[in-house]
Length: 173
Image 1 (tube, helix red, strand yellow):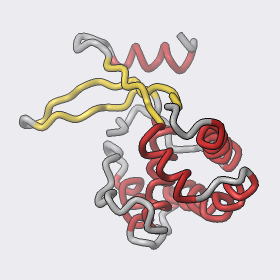
Image 2 (image 1 turned 120 degrees about the vertical axis):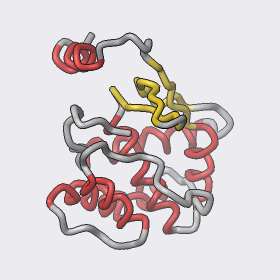
Image 3 (image 1 turned 180 degrees about the vertical axis):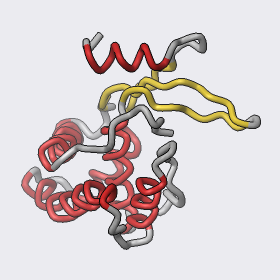
């Protein structure tokens, strides 16, 4: 879950294509090695016995990977991905944007524009990037889903999340 105190999803073409290039480079270099794509700092929450992770840091990367997975699913390369496993607390328009992409349509809500732009950027550039690197789409998808690792870092339960988030985003500590 992306909490309300997080900024909106705002990665653009540069960041998204860099992520794809990085994964493709590692897949091409050694398809048997794991690629550590970074971390996701989370707070473990429990709602009526259902555990979920509140994302404190890593939202941009997680959202981009979700959009990439949706695209690969539309190409028949992620059939296992049946439902979106990322949601936005108090931003139902963002949730709708992802659900609509999953159903091969695009939301017209202003919040959805960046989601749509990223999806279109990936759709237009993914096969070209992979072709330039001599990498097959299936090999890229296999590597992404089997070898790309995000380190999940849970913060202690007594963490003041507002303070932690403020420190992470203003001082980079």
